[in-house]
Length: 400
Image 1: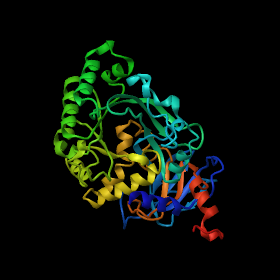
Image 2: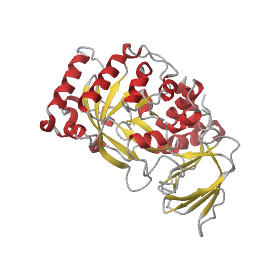
Image 3: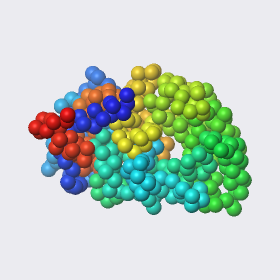
Image 4: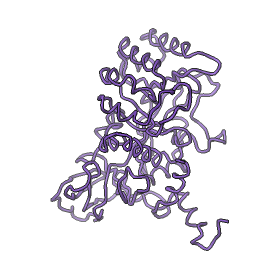
């Protein structure tokens, strides 16, 4: 159902065909309704200069020479951030030479670094921009279990490159293999951490607190192992997946372990997530756990913005506070991944990564009207939208 909905949403988005980066210019956006505060609040103005938000408020004056944009009372948010993607690493799942997300048979393990396979010209990156996504974490896929490698933070700028921070975290997959045991992977992790200063570079960086240890875990027993690891070694742990994290929400909050979760993962898709439930995000938030949203399956690279936003709406429909749902795609991931000085809220000094929406961003059928990344307008159509406008029946061509 979600796949059909996303196809419809992609075809419904409206913006002109992208021919290249728009020039940065000073902006004055008026009649802004802040989505984080909801209906009934006073409309504000946002002044942008040199790609940064200069001022925001109810009586802001337009900077001289700035381009004026009327938001017409529509909701405005920071552009979104997806906390687990493979943008720039996968183009087509079915074509091997377009998949650069795994070390394969190389045996690199923790040393595998996704930055060297990043394709900044990926069509999927441009599609993500047009869906209102400006920031993304792109992570390696390690297969069954053990160390997967090092991830990267992307800022989907229309010029200057999209790699914002390489080597931003070490990924460990705790899931059981079809022909192995999760116990073997946890033993491998403990052995690596016990090596201390003699450990290979990425593990040593995690031990020193320079990068977080990103533990992919769905089952409660693996989440308990992650909690014990945090206590024993003092490493900074980020839990990825966490379909059964609601069972240990108070302990995760006390240990200051944030959870990156798929907001639409409400049913078990494996034996590791028998306890999956639709209100996982709401229960974690209520317990004081910092949560951020991501996507999975094909949406880990395709429609990574829209799928996450639709999922956030589903989480809100199952009890998650509306503001918390928006924070899980903006403020929270910025804080979790250490980019909150640059991004995460509409505030002076932050990057002018701004989206004007046609309606409530938590409603599935809302779409971006205008998108700005570092103050540059994301103009034009994505390739999908251009194909729609070429072959849609309104152009006189039949789809039968």
